[in-house]
Length: 86
Image (tube, rainbow, N blue to C red; front, top):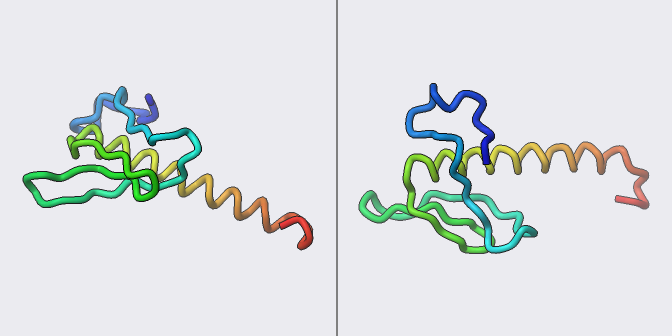
């Protein structure tokens, strides 16, 4: 997942790390969980978890933003449909 446009200006981000859900159909969001010693990034839907390294955290944030925008676009598209097709 190379989605950060300028990885050299974001500390800890190589642009080559991705966090993957247990299935491609998962629509969950990544959450930061745990105390400082055992923090993980975990999907709130499928439960997949990764260590909360700087790169994993940035990849999760990037994916969460993409999900937010897709949700907004879907809502805008649905609002343009006739009421019986929503």
